[in-house]
Length: 165
Image (cartoon, rainbow, N blue to C red; front, top):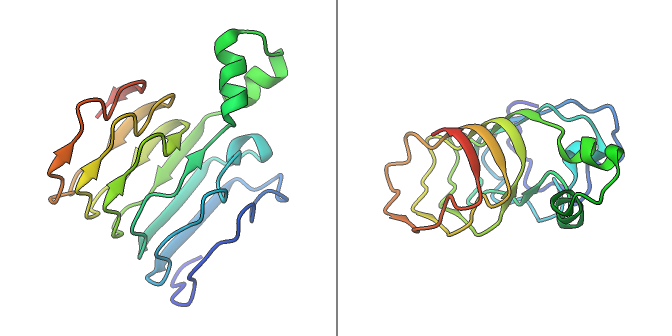
């Protein structure tokens, strides 16, 4: 969806009944200032989402992204989950982009994903909390162009498996 000038919200679980959804693209949505928690919970286990891109929006904070539930993460860590549950948890999202928006902060444990690429470029990020990406596996994380980043907490990247920053 492009030039979504009147889009200002997305309902929780808006995508949960779309099992074949592979891509979500929202571009130029200046009135979309926030996305309520719950919109992207389970985005890879409910469907096979490969690309999530919300760019040139009015987003002021990064939406809570939980690719899988905390319960599934605990099951995987304790190695007591079945093979099918492990496969769901290990689903990889190719690309997540939140570029060119107004995101100011990345809060603690707000991102729990397994992705090839997470781009949060050219926002207004000032602050990244401890454990912001805790439990995530991200091949490449890009924060370039965030000229307002003045406070990066000591453990901001703790618990994150990251190959390239």
